[in-house]
Image (tube, one colour):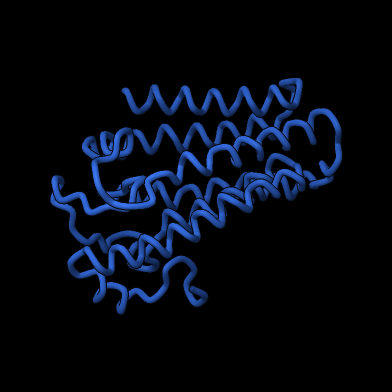
Length: 217
């Protein structure tokens, strides 16, 4: 309940930011965006391991790259503000056709399902790169981890721009470049860290070659 309440507060704040920037509520695709995000949040809270909930609320000590969420959040807020201002007020680049907005929301939902799937099979899905020795951290190779080594990051990288298209603002995609680059950086850092510190990860990396996109990287 604590995680669900906290997530609801964060989601509510993001929704207020989006609609506040737009200056109105009569924006169906904005509501669609919020509904996709809310459905994902509720499902994550339902399937997440209880100990993982505690880890995600307050990560344990140690590890590296602990400030990713803190650094990325202002850029995500900028994305929402630009989308709201663009679509609701100034119309600088709100020329995304309805069919592409629909594809954007559908793509956002599909790619958000990847981190959701990863959370459901990986009880060590921490927001911090660290070995959770106190929780018996071990290698996870089930579900999407059979195909790529970092499915959660893959989902986030593609869900962001699809969501921007769903909101209907081309200009709102610009602030997302920084979070995407930060996630790519995190992927490299985490892959190297796990290779050095998690038993069996080097052998796993030889079997599952792709970090994010099969056939690409």
